[in-house]
Image 1 (cartoon, rainbow, N blue to C red):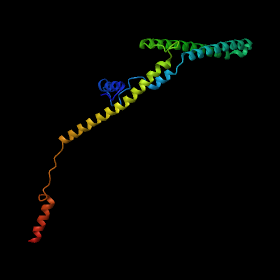
Image 2 (image 1 turned 45 degrees about the horizontal axis):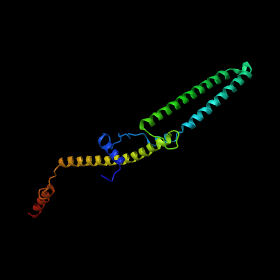
Image 3 (image 1 turned 135 degrees about the vertical axis):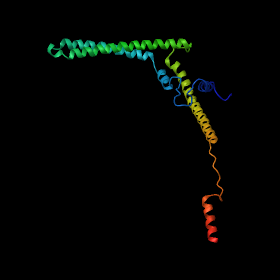
Image 4 (image 1 turned 180 degrees about the vertical axis):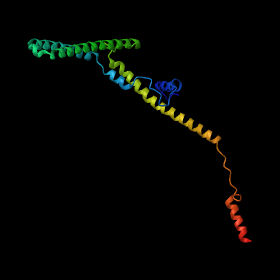
Length: 201
């Protein structure tokens, strides 16, 4: 059919040949949610790296201030403040390091994904940005989901129609034939006839 797009065809083929639960509540959308891809397209690694560097500088300033407070405070007033502050600071440093590692890992995965799909730099660009990659996928997944919902409804309607036809067929086969009552043979009619004959005689 020339009236459908390639995406239409892929969705229809997928639902009709690959998804055994198509048209039911158990059918699961097979791609990432479009909104997730939209959010991924908004990521700017440079901004995240800058934010983490700023946070690191802030932590260094906090550490210096903390040491000054510890040095200038009388010994009797240090506890439990000192232990709690040191624990808090160590936890903050640890979380910062974890976030740096996560960012590095995600950036590496992004670069591997770009390489896997063979995405090339736009002219004038230094590196491929998430916006460039995920906007295309966002649009594709949005279209796919719209068509997927529509086609799932169609399949659901078809299944319902088949079920209704099946029920109609079964009930038609098992239909109890009702006997037409001969008006002269009904009990009421016979009683009337008897009464009429008794009154006339």
